[in-house]
Image 1: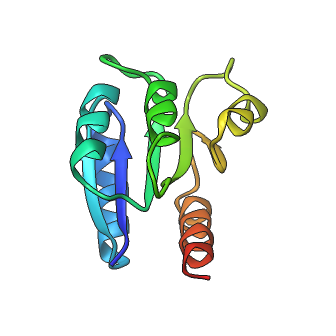
Image 2: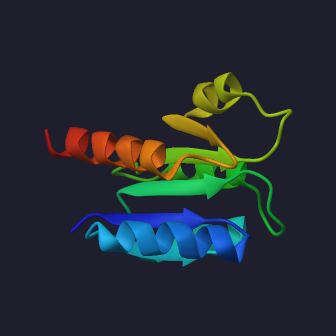
Length: 121
């Protein structure tokens, strides 16, 4: 079973993604801040991280920078409501995908499945 870490300070987003991904047979961990996410990543092997950008107590870029130090390196997906954050910036920093809030759950799920299938090959 693949493990996904969801990082967002919005409890509604955490619950939505967690419920949806759990129903698709993924093991889901949740963090409500960047620093909490980093602590979880120090203790658990994670295959994929879905993270908001702007959060109190450590932002999504700090989580991405930490993820890049891990071996094996989890796939990273940004979700953000920030209009000033471009998909190109996120991808250049190492994220594999970027979705602007409000996002289409089916599009996020398609990206998750594509990345995790790629990990198997």
